[in-house]
Length: 388
Ligand SMILES: Cc1cc2nc3c(=O)[nH]c(=O)nc-3n(C[C@H](O)[C@H](O)[C@H](O)COP(=O)(O)OP(=O)(O)OC[C@H]3O[C@@H](n4cnc5c(N)ncnc54)[C@H](O)[C@@H]3O)c2cc1C
Image (cartoon, rainbow, N blue to C red; front, side):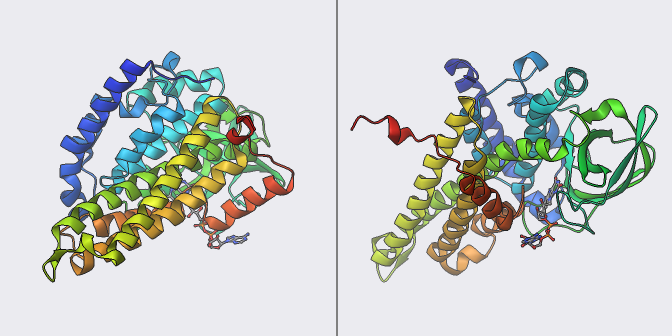
C-alpha cells in the first residue's frame, strides 16, 4: 500500500509546484512557442527548486515518494501550461519511477538520487525508424565479455538533448528483447535532433544511432529476455500518466470556455445563455468528470498495489478521446478567435494530439485491453462492495 506523503507535507509540496507552474513556467509560453525551444537555463532551475524532478522517486533515494493518487493532479496541472515542459517532466518522472520498480539496487543507487534533484535523467529508447515496436525491433545487443555491443537506431526519444542515461530496448537473441541502461557519453552513440513537433513544442525528441556502442552489462535490467515484461510494467502506469495529462488539458480548456462563454456577447446576450453553447459545455464537463473518475479508480488500485493492465490502456484511450472532444468543442465555443494565439485554446488543441502517440497509439491500447479481457481479466470493482 503506497500512502505517499503525509497530507500536510503533500499540500505544501503541491502548492510549491503549482506556484512554479503558474508564476515561473506559464509566462514562458510565448517564448517557447515562438522559438520552439525550451529555455533550459530558466526552466531547469525552476523545476529543480520546486522538487518536480523527484515527485515519484522513492524517499530512500532522495525523492518525495508521492503515491500515484498524489502525483496525478500535479502532472495534470503541468498539462495546462506549455506542453513541451509537460512532456519533459512526464518522461523524466515516468522512467525514474519505472527504474525504482524494475532496476536492481546498484542501478537505482547510481541514477535515482541524481534524478530526484534533476541532475540525472533516464530517457526511454524504444521506437525505431525502420521497424515496429516489441518483437519487431531491429536494434541488437550482443554480449561480449563484461559489455554489450549495441547496434541500431532509435527515434522520437524525448529528452534526448539532456538525458544522462537511456533505457534501450534491444534484441539479445532472435526472439529475446532486453532492457539495457546506456550512458549518454558511451562511445559510438550519436544523438541528432528531429524536426520540430506539431504541439508540445520546445523539447527534443531525437534520433539515436548506436554503432558498436559498448555498454557495461551491469546496465542490464533484470535478466536477458525480460525486456518486454519490463516494458509492459513501465507502460502500465505511464499510460495512466498520459491520461492524467489529457485530464489537465481538458480541464483547462473547459475552464477557459466557461469564462469566454460568459464574456462573449452576440445579439445582446452572452453566448453562455444559448442552449447550443450550454450543450457544448455540458458535454465537455461530462468528459472531464468521467476521466477524473476513471483516474481516481486506477490510481487508487495502483496505490493499493493492484496491477491495472486493462484499466491503464482503457483510461489512456478514453483520455485521448475525451481531450480530443473537449478541445474540439473549446474551439467551437471560442469561435474564430480561438483559432488564433490570442487564447491558449489552439495550443491546448495541438498539445493534446501528442496523447494519441505517447506510450503507444490507439491500436495498441485496444489490443492490450482486449487481450486482458479475453483472458478473463475482471475489474476489481468498487461496486461489488456496496451492500445489496
Ligand atoms: C513527441 C513524441 C515523443 C515521443 N517520445 C518517445 C520516447 O521518449 N521514447 C520512445 O521510445 N518513443 C517515443 N515516441 C514514439 C511513440 O511512442 C510512437 O510514435 C508511437 O508509439 C507510434 O509508433 P510509431 O511511430 O513507430 O508508429 P507506427 O508503428 O509506424 O504506426 C503507424 C500506424 O500504424 C499502426 N500500426 C503499426 N503497427 C501495427 C500493427 N501491427 N497492427 C495494427 N496497427 C499497426 C499504428 O497504430 C499507427 O496508427 C514519441 C513520439 C512522439 C510524437
